Amino acid sequence: MRIPVKHDRGGYDIILERGALMKAAEYLPQDRRTLVVTDSGVPAQYARAAADATDCAGVVTLPAGEATKSLDSYRALLSRMAEAALTRGDCVIAVGGGVVGDLSGFAAATYMRGIGFYNIPTTLLSQVDSSIGGKVAVDMDGIKNIVGAFYQPQAVVIDPDVLATLDRRQFAAGLCEAIKMAATSDAELFGLIESSGDINSDIDRVIRGALMIKRAVVEADPEERGLRRVLNFGHTVGHAIEGMMGGEWLHGECVAAGMLPMCGDAVRERLRSVLQKYGLPTGLPAETDAARLCDFMRHDKKAAHDGINVVTVDEIGSFEFVKMTPEEIAGRAVTI
Ligand code: NAD
Ligand code: ZN
Image (cartoon, rainbow, N blue to C red; front, top):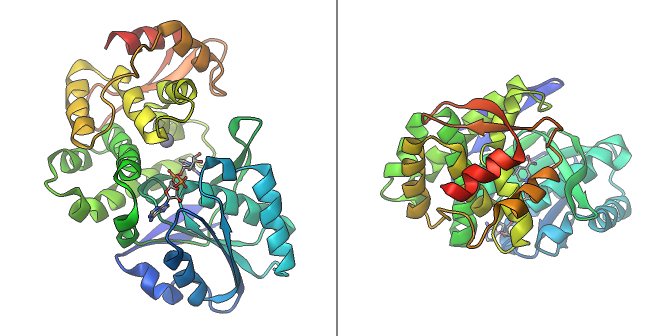
């Protein structure tokens, strides 16, 4: 299926289809040169399929992991683009998770002031979340996404079949972002994830449901001035846990634990059993103390002087924005 996404300079389509990668020529440009970017953890045949489907000047394979979202790899990628003599009429195709997508998108946004960008997300997180919305970035000095831009792709090709090779922990962490969106905005989708007897066969519907939510949010608030903050549900405490755990927990796992303090009691119980069902954390890491959690929250770039805007959910499918101090948030987190 084609999901059209509008933005201030036009729009693009998200193609969501099993087997899409194997017929990628239908969706990728045939009249321009391409550079395919992937990482060492993504099965090589996915990048190969994209390369074979286009007039490809080369495949760049970066080391897998968040460390690749750096200024050094950004520079190295720009060099490869220049060596391949890409011009403004050419394009970059990302084949990988959020790391490859964010880095390649940022390189595409800035090389020659912007060249074409196609995204083929291959993790569940990137399929439901990072490939839509136009945020591209790299990390610097230990600060995530500190250098970046809003830059829209020309198409996003999502093939759920590629999830077959993704490890279960990564799958669950990506699913958590869909659970997050469903909890705030779509009770029916939440019910589907909650009751699914076989999430692999329901995953197309889950991806579609999450994309519909994210599309509505980013179309209404492309630059995160208001509504888009709903996507941060679970992320204030989640980011603090991520900082405390130093990479031991995946982002989605941190968000799982981070959502629980932000819910009413009834929602928390439902959420907890969904998280448990998919092997996600159902509480804070052992020995979390409120003071440390507060420290990490104060350093979050979204923390304002008079408190942090958090998202709370008292009924599945709806949400509220509430301002809380780090102490209040930490207090909730350590008492659930
Ligand atoms: P990732 O890109 O690091 O991928 C996770 C791992 O899975 C990697 O080792 C990768 O090699 C491997 N992999 C990818 N596809 C695979 C497949 N089909 N089969 C087997 N292995 C596969 O992680 P991620 O969770 O996709 O993305 C995380 C990044 O996304 C973070 O940097 C985060 O900041 C960013 N992000 C961006 C946005 C946005 O709006 N741009 C939103 C959320 C997250
Ligand atoms: Zn997230």
